[in-house]
Length: 495
Image (cartoon, rainbow, N blue to C red; front, side):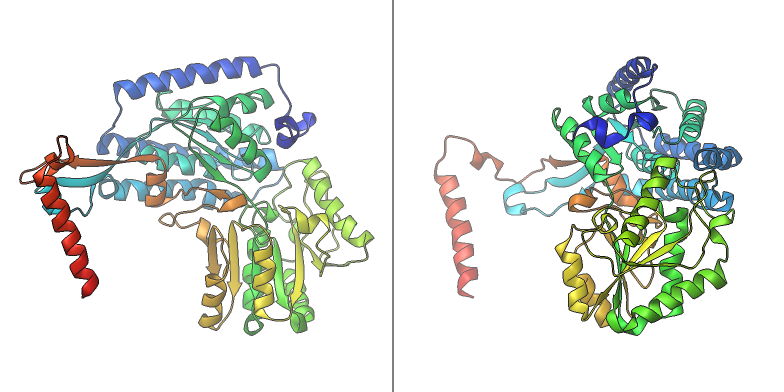
C-alpha cells in the first residue's frame, strides 16, 4: 500500500495547490524551533507552567468557536459534548500537568552499590527531547492535538502540529488559536494536503506522535525510521466488550450503548463488537433495542447525534450493513430512520452473529454498527479476542470480580475497563496508549511527561569510591574487589 492510498482518496485528501508553500512553512517552523532549543534547551518549571496556563486560557476563550467549527466539519455535533471533551478535557489535562509538574521534574534517585561508588549521587533526570512533531486525527480535532500538547509542553518541548484535512474548519481554527497564544518558536500549526502529510514525518524530529489508523501509522513509522526518530503511535483496532452471564442487564447495556453513541461510534476506544453468552443473545438484543427506544428515542435525528465525517465514510458504513444483509445475517434496527446524506447521520444498527469474513468483522468499524457474537464459555470469549490483534481497549462486564480479574489476566490490550467502557481515555493521570497493531507509547499525566522526555541517567561522583579499579593498569586492587564480590556471591548461594 502506498502512502497516497493509505491516507485517502484524492477527492477528500489529495494534494492541494498550497502544499508547496505548506511544506516550505513546515521547514521554516522546524528550523526556528530547532534554533530556539539551542538557545533555551531546558525551560524551567515556571516557564512550563506559563505555557500550560496559556493553553488553558486559549482553549477556554475559544469555546464557542470550537463548537461552531465542529458543527461545520461534522454537519451535526453536540455542543455540550464539545465542551466536555474538546474544551474541559484539554483544560483539565493541562491543569493536572501544571499541578504535578515540579514533582515530575524532580530527578529520581536510583539504587547503587556504595562499596563501588562511595558517596556518589545516582539519579534519573528527565530533560526535554527538543522539537516534537504532532500529527492529529479528525475525530477529536482539539482533544487529540492540544491534549498531547499539554504533555509535550510539560516536558519542556517545542511542538509543530499538523491537523487533519478532513476537518478544515477545526484545523483553521486550531491554527488561529495557537498563533494567537504562542510564539511560533514554541508551538505552531501547519495545514495542507497530501504532500504536506507525506513530508511531515520525514523531518528529523526529536520525537513524533501520530494518532490515526494502523495502515497510515505504519507508513509514518517507516518514514520516521529513516532518521531514527522515536515515535508514539496511537492507533485503533477492534475493541471488544466481553459480557459475562451474570451481567446481561440494563446497566451493562446502558454502558455499552452509551459509549457506542459517543461521537456516533467515531472513537478509537469505542466498543467495536460484543461477545455475549449464547443463551443470552436474544435477551441482550432485546435490552439494546429497549434502551435505544426508551432512553434515546429518535437519536439519529437528534442534535446529540454526531454526523459521520464525510459522505465517503457514511457510504462505507452503509455498505458494511448491506454486505451483512446480503449474506443473510440478522440485522436489527431499533430506529428505522434511514441514513441522512445531508447531515450524514445514521442510527445504531445491531448485526447478530456475523461471520468473521465480513468486512465489519475484519475492519475497525468507526461508526454506529455493533456486531454481537455468541460464546459458550468465558474461556472461548477470551480465546476469540486473543486470536485477533491486541486491541487498544478491552471491556469486561462481570459482577464476579474473580471473573473480571481472570479475563484481564489472560488478555492483553492497551487499556481496559471493568463494567464500563472507554473511561480509560478520560483520566488525566492514567497513561493512555496501545500495544502491537493498536500502537505503542503512552500519553496523559506522568506517563505522557516521560514519553516526551529524555530520561538521562546521571552519576555525580562523591568520595570513598573504587571507580579507579576500572581503569588500566589492572592489578592487586582489582583482584581484591573481584575476589570479595565472588566470595559474597558464594556465601549467598550457600545460605
